[in-house]
Length: 428
Image (cartoon, rainbow, N blue to C red; front, side, top):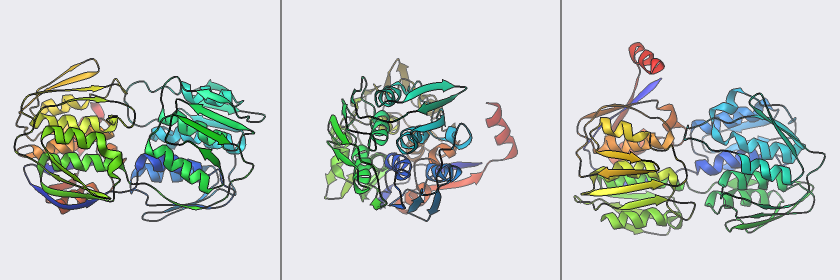
């Protein structure tokens, strides 16, 4: 077990290149098993979730070859093997195996997923979609059992806009008989990415990126090669780091259109934001303005950037309010920020941040992936050294974090936890 240490107060300057999208990758890898031959996915981020998913596929008989930025999945020898526990519980996105296995084999047994604890994230809309396509779905001893004689296209209206449900229903529907229409579908760029892969495999999908997706089922899907889109959440996180401590930072290999909601808020705060074709230049200002932020489904402000920007707002001169309409338990990072001197009060789904506060280095813990990013942002701004434990959460979503920040001028490194520190964490 490691801890991450950051010596704060160092200005950031230079270029940083963004990796492939984590939220695409964790859906594209399950989607790859639906082909009848090998699929290669390029521009993969070097994060732990990718390794776990590759191991999960191998459990079910797929052959995988993982290199630095590519994964080849050969599903020819896969079987409909139950995946009730183990690695399934290590990441939330394992639920995409439900739609992929159901679409490929007409049956699946998948353990209820794990990942970050952000409060209730029900999969009722996923199940509603599977049942509309003709599957029988039961929950037995902590695992979801899916079974269908055949899958038949249907018209499915999502009661709640859900990225996970939209993708899972797409996966189950691409080989169903007839046409499936998903209404009130999510519009995130990652959905377009998954639809592009499936289309390259031979699926017939129209409307991805709009609120209505039409899928005409096909009998076969073939292998292909696909490159993942840039990670807009990683890009946004580095934009926030640069807004906190940047004396001129360029974030490369991005799609600026995907980041307009964040760019607008940073400009409102007084940060210099200049968008190029595939890059954004950020320069911080000594005095930042307070702003109010409400997370919304895409193209609104991303919930995954709520926690990092909450840390940044401790630097703004005045009171800011951040409201998360997506997850009601996504403010655990505020307790850790208060350890560092932040003046934050949480009321229901909102946090009131009273800046301008000078943060102090402290021992803190990453309670989830994006909370970890918030603590890194705070550590970069703080006086002294910040120690972050539970770094495994951060490793799930940010590839080569220390290397990228060090190249920008940050002083950041890892150390092994002592036996006493491990015991303290285990008992907490």
